[in-house]
Length: 333
Ligand code: SF4
Image (cartoon, rainbow, N blue to C red):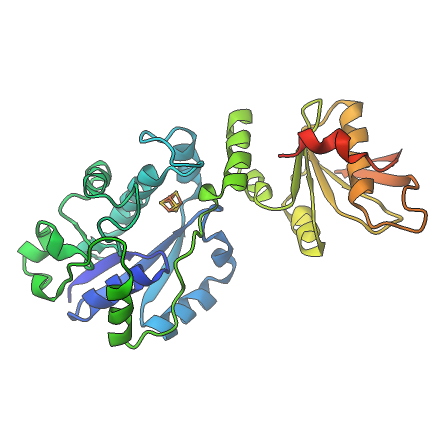
């Protein structure tokens, strides 16, 4: 039986691409690549996710974490960044390369994606698609079932593994053909098109770019920390993260490094903080002032509070007043 490996985003186009090929009697295995920038939360519930995809769309999917390779690429993507910190062309090149490496493991004869020419501004233009194919080493083995008829036949078509006549000729941004095709497959409940990648979100992207400019070594936990909470660059170089609710406080506790300080008010409700890379006493004072500022107000709101800094076995206590907003605005990341 012929096997194909699909790059699966989870969006409608990738679902349809899998189904169009599977409808020809080809065994389709989908792979969804994840990094902290997209899809990472699925790793904690991979089985549940695979079951949902199987039951909803009739597709077998596995997850693959490509964070480390992605972090390295993101520092200097040869094709540059998009509007924010999104390296879309090199992102695709990297994911296609990874998929090509997996072909052997899944005994796949070719790759498929849900791309449609002209659908996205930068990364799905015809010339860009060619560059992505060439630079990922996927020339000839990458089939785009939804727009295959608008392109030269791939090897799988030429070799008769796939019937080109049963592939499609979608083109451009319209969604109607996809919606109709979904109906034909009986797929009514599918994810709406959404960003899904934090590298395209202005605020997050700015913060990630800040981190990349500042740290030569990119660490998974740091990247995960960057993507939630309030962040401050303190005046003497410390990086301070504050949780905004109980769930974020718990995540900060789980993600902090042994070398970081966990910061909170032991005698008053308030946020958890993580202080990273601080050595100057003024940064400790600033962090304490921020914790009190964002802590729950007690009767007599501005009373100073005791703040505990804990790292390994070490504990430090500071008494701090809430920091005035005007003081920390420009530290905000
Ligand atoms: S939006 Fe994000 S996941 Fe999508 S291609 Fe661009 S960088 Fe990659």
